[in-house]
Image 1 (cartoon, rainbow, N blue to C red):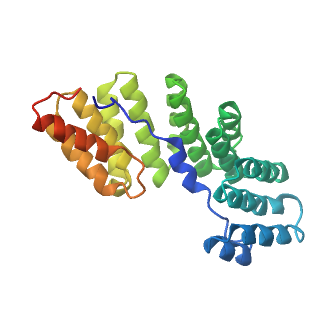
Image 2 (image 1 turned 135 degrees about the vertical axis):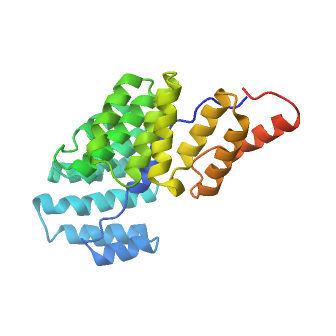
Image 3 (image 1 turned 90 degrees about the vertical axis):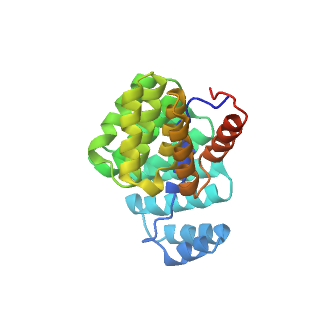
Amino acid sequence: MIPRVLLYLIFVSFLVLSIISLVSASGVDHYSAGDYEGAIEAFTQELESVSGAEQAPLLNNIGTCYVSLGKADEAISYYSQAVDADPSYARGWINLGVVQEKTGKTDEALTSYDNVPVADTVMYAEAMVKKGSLLAALGELDEALSAFNLAKPGANGTTVVELYTGIGAVEFLKKNGDAADEAFQKAIDADPEGAALAYTNLGVLRISQGKNDEAKELFEKAVANDKSGQTNAAEYLKKLEGMVSNGSSVQ
């Protein structure tokens, strides 16, 4: 049996935890070279020369270094210090929310996403997509759609793909097949090469409609564009091909 839907996985967006490169060339160089301890030392030294809100990007970078070292508690500590230094620092709130979510602190993560300033439209859109995806994973589908709708005005780039992939998954779970289809198509149209999850989910939708040939094509497109291994499209395709060759039905 092939699962009916693959929800957008929020931790895929953990890739947004990038270093803010304008604050310290030395720290960035260490980070780029994979020397995270060296980067922490460089960013920590630079903290001594700034104060107040100017410390926020450096504290954020230290948090991201700790993420790369697999030290979530330390990362949360530094991201928290970043938003304490500058409560309007949107990237810090988003990064804090992502790590909180990863460590099972879902209520805290939702609060962090809500703390992203609405006036920062692009970052607010990113935060609302993450909030919507988390709410969907928690089964709060109506609330998830509300968050996704808040993201629409400021969404751009990969956020658009994530937004409509998430909407499509929620609509599928709500048994709104036409709305799910439309949303997945919007995600694909926004970035055909970056929409592996949308291709995968649309393929699952096609299976539920009995359109296995179309599903196969969609899974193939998902595999071709799944550069980071974020979907189960290859597994789904293998199962689908095996069932068809054996004359079995796909459920």
